[in-house]
Image (cartoon, rainbow, N blue to C red; front, side, top):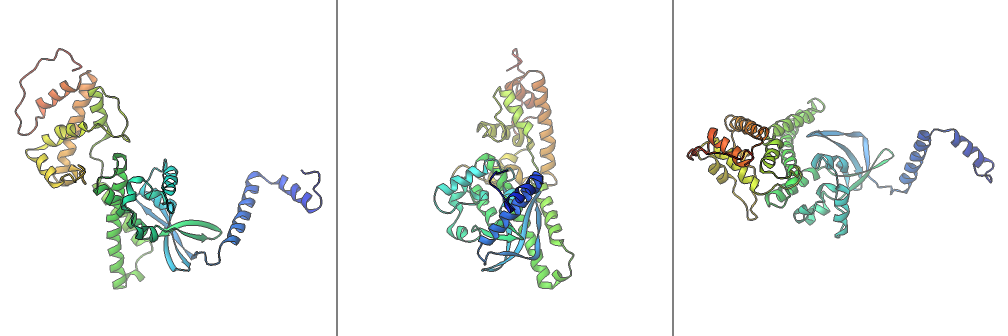
Length: 353
């Protein structure tokens, strides 16, 4: 305690010394919030009564609220919630945000900060949905954006994917954006029908939220991972390559191996038909995966069964110390490429070949 303290100051020090660290932290936090609230303009948007909740979308919670400010009534989503819904893993996000800010103009929110997206963010988008809305939720200041930003951001990711501008490790973000776009569009039309018919006045609370979750689950099922990580890991092991992890770009020749092992062996003409349905763009990038064109009732089950067989051959070859050539010979003997002739029996003196 300060030796010069006296009177009220001495009493304040004495009381503070008796408080737990948690209690002192709480008092300091409330005091800071009061000072911050006093410094805000009187027209800072505030949450209307108790009109706030959370949207549960694709496993992410997005805090949402209805606020009143100079622009009137606005529906807002929190920046943190949008980031989690679109990006998922936020590692490195702060660095991207700072870099976007350093390149000129107002800093972009984290969920559109990657350099690959910048060319697809228009001035109207920057000055509209991407313009932050800082609002008060009680004593807490929250950074949010107009609710329309979610669909707009998804569209940016999809345009970047269509143009072939994304890196391989960013494609899963574009996948989430497509799932969200489909789900929001379907839920939006349901809301419009409810409003037009007057059903919105009698529908159960959170009915649209439940419907949205149902649509998301359906879309996620349609996007279920068809090519397990093990398939690619085993290719690297059989080739004697160092596995870089799924987040790194794979050797381009792996795409040819995938076509050889999977699509060429599903049935005659399947590879050609799938390639015709999803041609490469000017940058040599296919906007869709080949397997997305397989039918739910026949194509997908065929792919799953064939993939299981290929994995079994990979495991068997690795367990016996075989290399890529001998593994491929095994597959050719049992699951030949459709339309190709069987190879003549060959001798393999070196099992690692």
